[in-house]
Image (tube, rainbow, N blue to C red; front, side):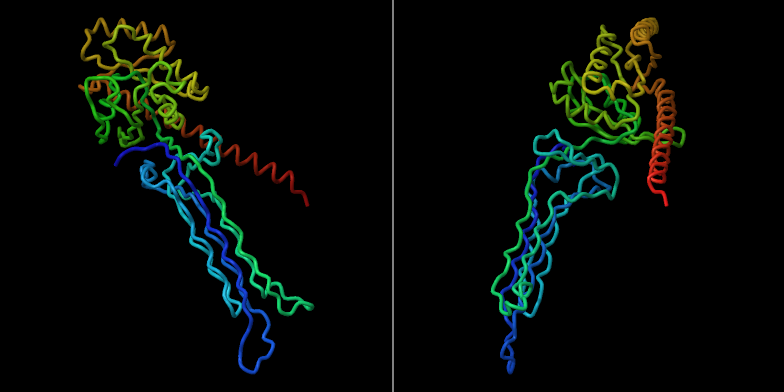
Length: 354
């Protein structure tokens, strides 16, 4: 299945059905009176977050979604049925934005979450609704209210425990392929990976989701090389795995480039926990590895791990380190949610006093 993380769609809810103009006509009943029913309500456009999807590819081939109009009312005081709703299913992590592709409407982060974006028009009243003591035979009806329409953007930001970042050809796809069942394209040239990839990585009986983000380049935070769309996927990750190609000459420059783009895009990315890893040590002499690790640790002020994604050297140690960091992050997140709920409950109790 092809990956698509952004789509522009048109939504239109159904018009309300018109009311009926009708009078009771039966044998031996001279003045039957009005009995026109009301029109049905138009269908609404609803977006629902579902499990089992990880792409917006369905919205590449269909961009217009229209709910059904309400059915007109009928005689004998019969109201028309409501029009069918239009339901759009999106994967977890989808953001809904206004037509300007900037104003956030909703963030779909949980399965089962839904939002009504266009409400169906109310049905028109039939002439029976206009009967009064002075107007016993009204001929007035309502046509039904029009539905709503709008353009929106759907933007998918993958939800993963750890995100792989680095310059093109740093070995990110090789690492994902070696540690999970994901089969990304691997080749000896930059920009082999053009779309984000997800893989489930297991170690010691535990698992976590790893996202392979296409290689970033200088200026990515300003949109160069689809940088904005790629950096958006990193926002959801708990931990960043920063891979650096150990065979290149300027390893500190490579680290500085990626860190600069993360900080320029959002402070949130710069504050995320980071594991710095020097990859491709199988192509280096032991003395070279030690020199480059020392240089990188001095420049970054953080501990640097070394691996070879091809041979598997030190990969297990890295996976256990990531698992420990992700576990701590999850516990912190749960604790913050519980504290927020307790605070909210306390405020509600303070507000309500018998």
